[in-house]
Image (cartoon, rainbow, N blue to C red; front, side):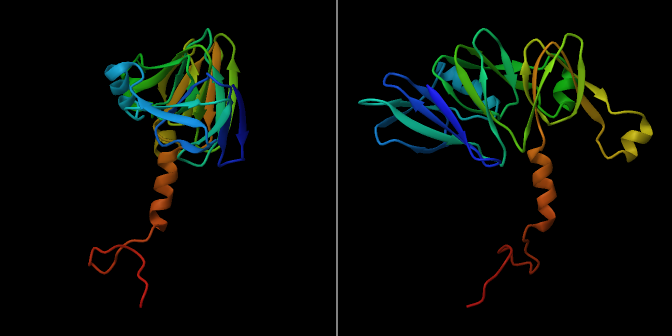
Length: 237
């Protein structure tokens, strides 16, 4: 399989498959494909596997793409402005935020992982449940905004605003700490808690939190002031 990531901040990934190769993707992620590409929705991992995906905000079914009568291509894109990046999970275990998965080679297995500490689940911005990616092959994740990749040495620590962690190797320790003293919490504008990641392992961060993006847009969205309940802008006849 060959891949090409197209675009800047509204990216899509184009996968070129040889005959016999297959890829799985989140339902609704496909943008375009060659005419000989076969689509088939299925419960990868059975009903239990599908229910686990629902817990991570993914779809119950995955869509499998297979070229017929030779090679072909298929392209996928995320549902928020941001970037797409590949992660090779061969001989490694990678944990990702619950809505980061986009598509993967057939040999990649999706499962769920629970945060080790209850406090991390409540306050970490990612919830209790993360996606566990194992097996062999490449998976493609998407983030909101730009990405920052860091390779942490053993014992090296990075503190991140909650909600900005896209994923990390299973060797990385994940915990939550107070952002600072009372004055910092009340007036610093950075929130109450920070996510603390301790190496060794790779860490992927994003520059934007979709929840913050949505809240910043709310004051500018049209809303009904007439009391009719019919919504925002009205165009006269």
